[in-house]
Image (tube, rainbow, N blue to C red):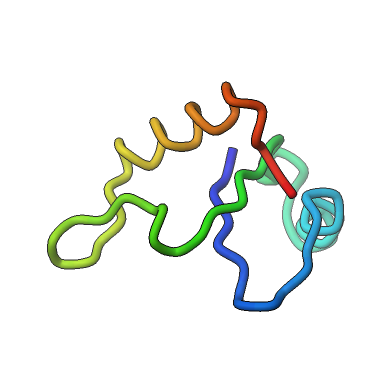
Length: 70
């Protein structure tokens, strides 16, 4: 699973992202699911670092809601 924050105006599907990663990474390193999110949705600390535990919960919650990709 991976959280993806696309650049403003970028149009990218999970299938396109997966295909591009398969060309560059070993197959076991390519995430099985992608969650597309806005920058402000990513949980961060007061200093701006990503909260990894909270990010894992965020991804799991989005996948459970049926919103894995767009």
